[in-house]
Amino acid sequence: MCVSLVGTLERGLGYHLEHRTNGFFSKRNQRGSVPPDGHLRFIFLCAEMAKTGFYIKDICVSGYELKTALQEAAFLSSALEVDVDYEYNAAEVLQLKSDLGL
Image (cartoon, rainbow, N blue to C red; front, side, top):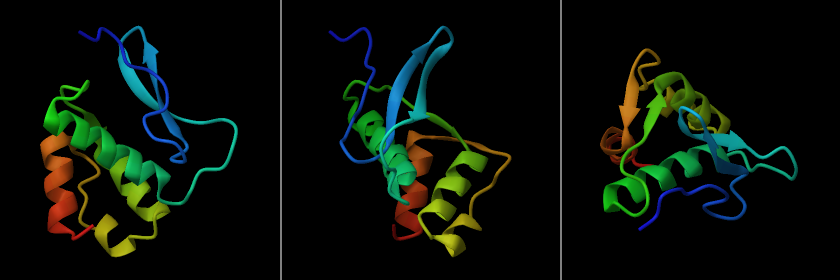
């Protein structure tokens, strides 16, 4: 049984998980390069892990963060579909990914 999961989930994304007193959060790596789609791929990876129940039960990502990640990855028209005032869970992130054909 896993009590805590922190660190890099996949090399080359430029993001890792960090434990704080009020939960686990994604954090941009301070060193190294971050690919334009690294943030978006990290969100999708966490959502996929939550879907399978592998280490992560669920995620909560703000619409603003999701929209920003889509813009960074140059999916500008897809970013327009995101409600910035909404908090997305893993199932909703994956549904949005499917709906937008990403």
